[in-house]
Amino acid sequence: MLTCGLGFFFGRHALISIISNDPLVLQYGSTLLIFAAVYQLFDALYITYNGALRGAGDTFVPAVATAGLNWSITIGVSYLVSRFFPQFDVAGPWTCATIYGMILGLFIWLRFKRGAWRAIRLEHGSNLENQSATLSFMES
Image (cartoon, rainbow, N blue to C red; front, side, top):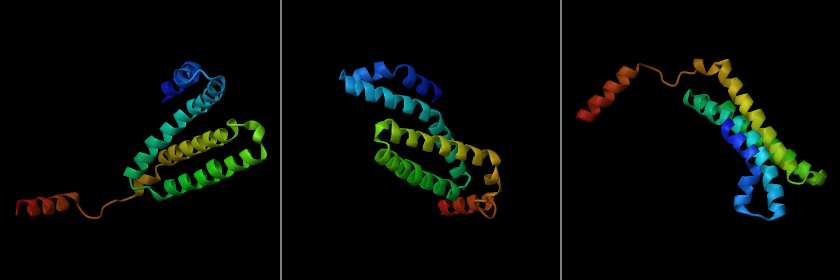
């Protein structure tokens, strides 16, 4: 994702020119690709470590953090920035969305690193007992 982000950043003008040669599209698109470039690394942190936490059974706190940060920063603060600071144009809301991605990615990564998920028990009883019951059911 770091490589992808670097490609977005350094190749932003070339990438946007594939889509359009309109100067306004080039200006906005190039600006938005800078945000996408920064977002890449933190989104990769979120996707990777959130998946690991889900697999370990740690779902509630990451879900609340995702919903809470998304609604408060991406929706709430972005709206306020758009409404009261229109001079920031597209960079205002996208700055908020990028900050959301950075905070969420780092939060999920830190949650995984702290290791509380290791104490979660997904099953009670022996896996061997469950497998032998499944095998005997399938054989009959």
